[in-house]
Length: 180
Image 1: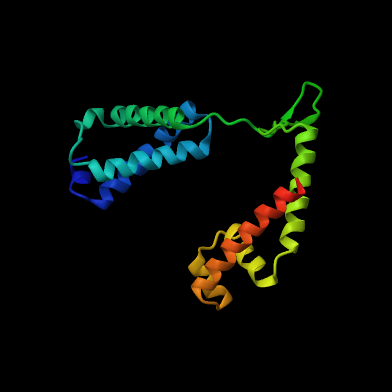
Image 2: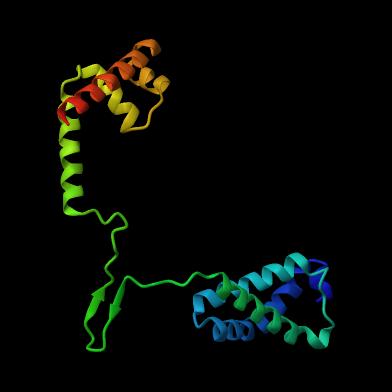
């Protein structure tokens, strides 16, 4: 361990070769997943390499100390991991099912109809705008572009784009109120 603290690559490789299998077994037992266990063992050796000079146990305790560090890191890994709910599950008969995800909005049929009618009304009102101002509104509200970006994309002066957008919004508001 003292040689590892001095950044001796050969000593580190010897320690790795002698202990990695045991540490992998410790981590696998805690995590029940070989891939995650391999990640934990790698983290243990990275930590050992980076902090070797600070935490060097006495030689007789080296393997025991590495096993404790590995176990603790595996437990920490379990604590950080969020519980996962699989999208598919198998019932007692062996039939595969998918979890049904509830819609957060849970709109009633009437609310859905009104939203559809509003969308149709908006489409009709947008159709009444001149082509270039309508394009400016689309760039602003459907692509999220700023006035400057719209002016650059349409090769028009900034003031013209601002005027088109403002006038178009006022016309849309009037049209939507008239259709309501």
